[in-house]
Length: 68
Image (cartoon, rainbow, N blue to C red; front, side):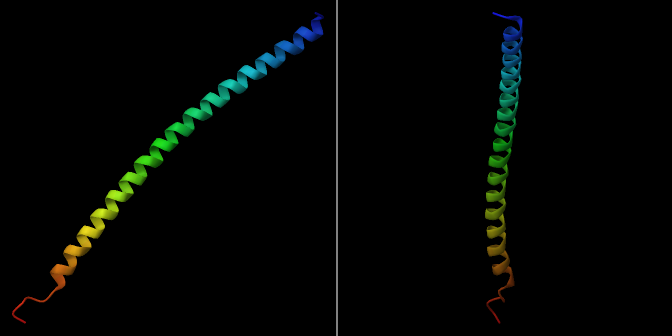
């Protein structure tokens, strides 16, 4: 092979390796973000349930006593 062709192949291999590393890094970021989103959704659902439970309790507190 000519030197020019070898240089071009080497450059392509280097670019491929860099892109492969970039894809792997991006994949790791996406995995971390999805875990964070899943946790936030779970926390939000828990907060909704707590809010609903506390609002039901407030309705009971606002009722007048039975002797009225």
